[in-house]
Length: 365
Ligand code: GN1
Ligand code: MG
Image (cartoon, rainbow, N blue to C red):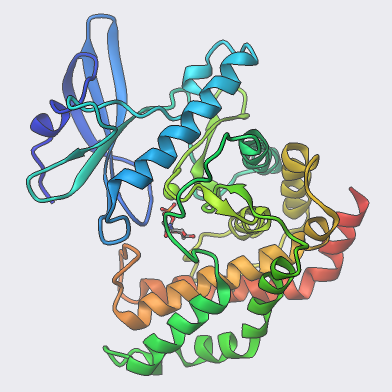
């Protein structure tokens, strides 16, 4: 897609003049670009995003959430005396009409963030230290938002991690099977139907008042944290569209999903998709270092379970989107969403096989 970047960028109050705009990152939802501006003091880089309005039709509540969350985080970092605190958090740049976004002639909306400098994201982690640091960053992120002042954040994507609801959506897609794809996904469909009982557990505990709703990130895939090139520590947690009220466990679960196997989300060689206990131990220790102080007993005892249920949930969403015709997640090859679902389900299987050993690790920390 071709965009008139200069005219879009002119709508925002930025330093200098645009020199270069390039596609950036590996997100499945928005279109993301790195912008390099030439300014009197040197080059300044920004992140420009065109929001996927099929998924986020309303800019106001979305941007309001992000503005509140980032301002809160920035204040905390500053009060802790962190010298480069402005590079440790995403900051929204205002548009010329004083909003945190700009709507173009086609009705799409755009936003601009600072580029987190001196680090990068990883779709697949390279070592245990990275796993520890990334998980710790997500734990601290939750900790820092525990005292976000009222009112509650908008529920931007209602029922986002609601497993029973995701299962219903899957059944509806299977029922209509508009592209006759179900035949190709028979094994995955069978796996899901066999294991759908898993979805009932957390909603029940929540209804019984055993698991509280907190402010959570809700998309803690490992490439949503920027790690420093120099020190390896986390610089900032990014991708804040789904920060809203949620269960802490879902955040830990998605960390588990995207770290414990040394393989990609769409890995074709299923042999490679399996739990590495050292990786699990690293993310467990990291997350608890950040969030350990406020998790209750029920949350602690479901940490391993959360990895299983969120992996099943995201796998269900990939499978549903495959059946529906790839209408939600960007795809880059034929049957991509089916491959993603298959990989998730293989990982669920591996978590089940390692569940006892993983739970022992939880008891040990
Ligand atoms: C999407 O935006 P991105 O690519 O970080 C999705 C997550 C899924 C993830 C799977 C708003 O995350 O829920 O877990 O893909 N985000 C949204 O890779 O649906
Ligand atoms: Mg992302």
